[in-house]
Length: 239
Image 1 (cartoon, one colour):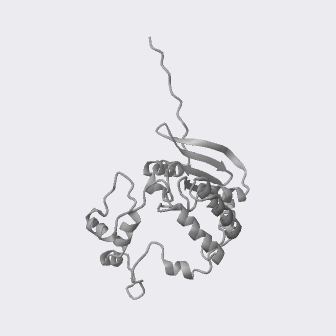
Image 2: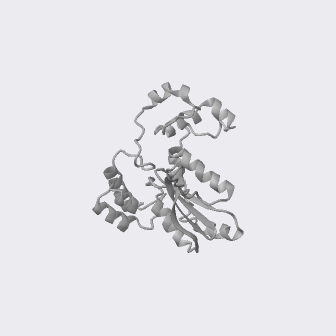
């Protein structure tokens, strides 16, 4: 994360050095106080951006304005809506939605949140790595694909690539660009037991930010094919 934030020009050289010094190998959920403090500085330097999608605008609509737009729930939008998360908070707190989901009224929180501070504060058994799960699943022959948007600062491409490299898997197909309608949709590499797909211009939630590219990715996975290559162009001579 630090490397991505620094190389994208979001944090200073000094903060980058301190993050590596004070936070390296710290748990994400419960870091040390010194790591927490330098994180605060990093977020201050980053400014008011969406770290899950660094090149799209954050949501600037307040709750009252969102409530006036509630009639639009369920409609597909032609462009990315940065207020999607706030829409979901309103939607999942509706009594009729919670009844449809069979939420137990005696045990539900006062307000549903997309990321619960209560859970985050009290979660004591968060694993430091899931690589052992991959090591367990790969020998079973399951088809495993990992995909990542390249504008996500929270789980950036760099993090995913370091993690995959730690598995030390043989390469079956080297790093290359993949295409959608003649344009580069991202990059991919195939390993023995795992395929990695990088989606160009997508944030943390790939289908939300780049739905057409996400569909291409999912279709390739379901069809058991590699990501598309660039179709060769046919040249015709004028007679």
